Every structure is written in C-alpha cells, then in structure tokens.
Image 1 (cartoon, rainbow, N blue to C red):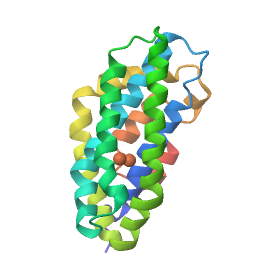
Image 2: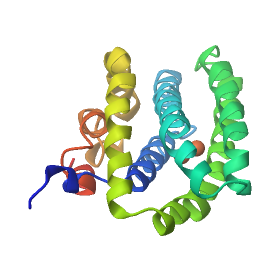
Image 3: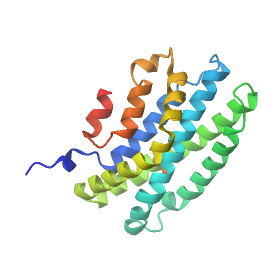
Length: 198
Ligand SMILES: [Fe+2]
Ligand SMILES: [Fe+2]
C-alpha cells in the first residue's frame, strides 16, 4: 500500500544533508568577503550547527546508545558538541570586522570537519547496518518534526543571514536562501530528491 511516510528521508540521509549544508555555507567563506557577508555566513553556520546538534542529541544519539553502547565515536560526540557550542557562543560575540572572528570560525570548522568525519564513517554506517529502513525513516520523520519546532522561532533571522551570506555567490545558483530554508523546513515531503531539486 502507498504510504507518504515511505517517501520521507531516513535519519541518516537527513544528517548527511545537514552536514552538506554547513559545508556549502562554509565554502562561501573566503578572505575577500566583506565583514558583513562573513558575519552572515558565520551566523548561518552557527544556527544550522546548533539545531543539528540538538536533533542528534535528542533523537539520533539515544538510539545509537541502545544499539552500539560503548562505541568510541559515540562516546566522544557529546563532548565534541559541547566544544562546538562553546566556540559558537564565542563567535557570536565577535564582530565580522575583527580578525578574531575569522580565527574562531576556522577553529569551529576544524572541530566540525573532524566530528563529521567520525559520524559519516562510523555512526551513520552503523545505524544503517543495525536499524531497519522503516526505523531509519521513522527517526527521520521525528527529526524533521523537531527541526520545524526548533527553527520556527528563528526562521526570519536565519533567512536574512542566508540572503546576505549567499548574495552574489556562485553557490546562490545551487543553494539559495529560499531553497536552504525550504530544505530545512520541508525535508519530510519527498526525501533526498527534494533537497537536490531546490
Ligand atoms: Fe554531531
Ligand atoms: Fe552531525
């Protein structure tokens, strides 16, 4: 029987998509960008990482804890999130005109790249080996529902940061402000295909 839920992305695909969104944004961060654009890009990265970390902590990690307790990547993950959140708090206090802003953002992204490597090469494959497709989709639906709740209060602010950060950039052709926000809000409708089409 046809089921709309079966078209939803799995939790592992949603996590990979979130990582890609952060990297696409970071790849716009070049040294010749104005302080306003740099700040908008770092605001977008901070907001996306904060929501992503909360979703993983509330929905993904607890499930992994039941199927893979004691895994070293899983044990390190909350501590790495805490380090990232500390850098995010610091970054938000620094204006884009300050050289320290760039240094802290680059330090944050070094942490993110290391953390994402563990998730994508250890945790996500383990989840896909040990959980059924139905369960992965069920968790994806739960993650999307929670994402909408977390994003709703700050949707306007996030949209503005996207618009400033991506204005005039090559990535705007691929992942514009409206598309990125739409993808974050409406990932549940048609799975991975939706994100590619935005
Ligand atoms: Fe994580
Ligand atoms: Fe992640």
